[in-house]
Structures are given as structure tokens and as C-alpha cells.
Amino acid sequence: MSSSEKRRNTTPTAGAPAVELLRINKWFGAVHANRDVSLSVAPGTIHGIVGENGAGKSTLMSILYGFHRADRGEIRIAGRPVAIRGSEDAIAAGIGMVHQHFMLVDTFTVVENVILGAEGGRLLAPGTHRARGELAELASEYALEVPPDALVGDLPVGLQQRVEILKALYRGAEILVLDEPTGTLAPQEADHLFRILRRLKGQGKTIVLITHKLREIMAVTDRISVMRQGRMVAHRDTATTTVAEIAELMVGRRVLSQVEKEAVKPGRDLLSVENLRVRDDRGLSSVRNVSFSVRAGEIVGIAGVAGNGQSELMEALAGLRPVVGGRILVAGKPVGAGGRLRRRLGLAHVPEDRRRMGLVMPFQARESAILGHHDDPRYRRAALFDWAAVSRDTAGKMDAFDVRPADPRRITAAFSGGNQQKLVLAREIERDPLVLLVGQPTRGVDIGAIEFIHRRLVAMRDAGRAVLLISAELDEIMGLSDRILVMFGGTIAGEFPAGRATERELGLLMAGAAGRERSAP
Image (cartoon, rainbow, N blue to C red; front, side):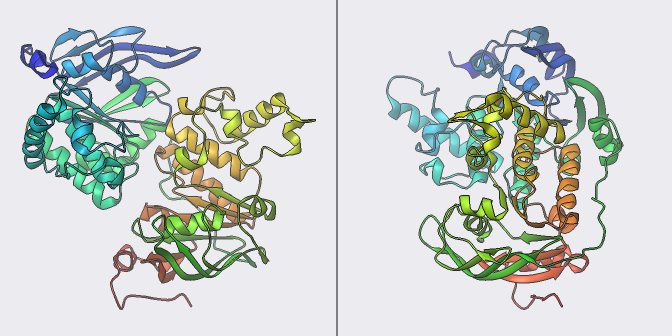
């Protein structure tokens, strides 16, 4: 009997919540991650769970899905107590989960990923044939169209997410948990995801949505629960609350939505880019004769739809991608290949993808905190590492950037995404570089940490440093930047001074609209 068949043979209690978590407690060593957490989710609704990074949201949902087991507490599904010892029990109870970092095999096709673990027998052909038919029905019903024979690794991130949702629905999920689902999506992809969620809700599915993006959660949820420091601190109906109230409940204080900064006072050029040409991984031209500069005491933001050369530009500036032509200068000095010389000249880099390029997940935090700087004499004792010195240095960075828990020996992968991001930022900013290249600085970061990160970037600018910012968040680009460059098709399509860029004008240039270019005076 399949897991969905087993679930359909259980009769829900009339009027019962779809999900009830009662007094859930979870410890990881000395860390009390969930503290007597209770939650009730009504059937056929979209229920948001918000909180700062490390508040215990993902841990709570991992308990519901069986990745972790509660040390104390009770779980009820449709009014009946259930024992969830692993993901198999969760699936049998009608629960599906889409994780922040997708659980897909890149070298498998869409169909192969969907049936993985649910093949239905020793022979793959019958299961694959049956899955094709069910996937076609699901895709049509929920607007989840994905090419079934495409390799997952070749799909854009938005389509990969659809595969994860299809996997859960294929296994009969009536309750769908999504953990930070828009963290890596473009705005258009996020909008389509929300249309899918509303359609799922309309078909009677129950959605639990974990996210740090409050405007999104206000747009799509029916009810919001707020966690802080492992506890559930508030529940609100979405229609009767505000972004400001939810933010204050999350952080425990009033949060500024817009960073305060003084008028720009730019100095000399600290980063100069002259006729830069770069190729992408396929050997195609992705950056085409791009020239610009970033001055001391200035934040320059680059806006653009993903795939228009911003990522390749950042990698080339950091020494991670070969330059085909042109020059890069830091404080007037040309740089060569590789990143080590650039660091010595005063250039630091916060990559767009912290997990793939900024950290080593199995390393301890203190090891990740010195990546690229491991030859610093402060960390050495003769030919060996002075781990006591490394730990002290990392502890200082963690304190300065409010990394939680402040444990230098904790495995990097065990930190929440926002705390991983703060660890990368601490590593690069605390060395006081002349030039900071920062890509997606607040991706997957909660509102309190966003405010903190923005303040640190503005503090660098006010200290006379140069900051080059790439972000998928247009509000972030407009709020932080002193000048805004727009990239389209690998070129600079337009340039705006800070106060004169409108979202509409930027959007037109990002979309490649002709005749809309403007230049700063």
C-alpha cells in the first residue's frame, strides 16, 4: 500500500486543524532551538511562519517533516496524534516539504527525480510511465508545467522549485511546507509561485510558508505566526496586521525599513573598470566592453534581470573568472589574474552564492571565517595553525556581526542561512578593505539582519571605502546606492544618480526597452 493510500484510509476529525504542534521542544546540545512551541494551522489556508534567522522556524518544520525528532511535545494531523520518526512517516501523513536548498539530483531527469524513492517496483519503466501521466495531470491542474525529460541541472531555479512541488504532490501531499521559497527566485518567478500556491489553496491544500520577506507574506498568507529565540511569540490574521507590527514582533524592537545615510561625498576612484570583456561558462560573451568606476565614499549598485552579465562581471572583478579583454584597477593599480593579489591591494568579495562560493559547509565556522586569509601571520604558529588565535578572532567577528549561536567550532552547515551570510560578511568587512564587491548581501536574511547589514555597508561608505553592490532586490539597490548602473545584454544600458531613479525607469532598462537610457550629469 502506498503512503498516499495509507493516508486516505484515515478519517480526519471534523473541524480539526490540518496541523497542530503542541509544546514542541528540541535541543541541539546546549542550544534549545524550540521552546514549548505550539502552532495550529487551519485546513485549506496559507499560513506564514516568520522570525529572525536562528529563531527556530526551519527546525520546527523539520520536526514536522521528520528530519528531526522532537525531544518533547506532540504532533496532530487532522485532529489525530501522529508519530513522525522520519520523512516516510510525514509523507504517509500527507505532508510534503520543499526545502530552501533543493533536494534534487542534477544529473537525473524531471521524471526520475519525481519518482525517486517511489518507483513502485523493481522495474523503472512501469513507474516512469505512470509518473508521466500523473505529472501531466498535476502540471495542468496547478500550473506547474516542467519538461519531463529535461535534466534538472539544466533547468533554471524557478523550474527546479516546481519539480520539488511536483514531487510532494505526486506522493499525495495535502499539507505542503515551503522553506524560504523565494530566496533565489527572480520577482517574476516569485509572482508565479504565489499564483501556484493560491491555486493549491483553492484545491483544498494546506500551505505552510516560511519566509523572511514580509511584503510577500502579507500578500499571500491568511494567517501569520511569529517566532523569536526559539519561542512562538504571536499569531496574527494577515488582514488585520501590518508589516511594521510583524517586523517589531520578530525582532523585539522597532525596525527601520529604510537605511539612513548622509549625502554622498565621493573621493578618488578606488575601483576602475575599462572596456572589460568576459565570457560565460559556455564561452559566450557575457560582459561586453563595460566601463565604470566606483569612488571612495560611494556605493554603486548594479540592477538587472538575472542572466544579463552581472554575475560574470562580479566574478571577473574578484579574480574568479578569466578576463578576455580590458583592465581592472584597484586604487589606480592594475590587477592580474587570480584573487590573492587583489586582496593584497585591498579588494574584498562577498559572493552571490554563499554556500557554493563563500563557505565550505562541512568546515567549522572558524575555518570558514579565515577562507582566503589562511596565510595571515596572526593565524600561524610556525608552520601550523594557531587554532586558539583563529577561535578568538572568529569569536570577535561573531560578536561584531551578531552571528548566532556564537560558537566558532560549530559546523558551518548547522547555522541558518542568514547567520552563514553574516559570517561571510564579517570575514570580508572586518579586514577593512578599500573596495568591497558584494553580491546579494541580504539573500535569505531576515528583516532585523537586513537592517544590520545595510548599516554596515553604509558605514563602509562613510569611512571612505568603495562598495559595488549587485542585488536582485530593486528596493535594496534604490535604497543603498549613490549611483545605479543598469545591465542588459552584458552592457551598461543606463546610469542614474541616487535620488533620480524610479522603479519604472529602471524596469524599462532592465527589460531592454530602447530609447529610455539616461546618463548621470
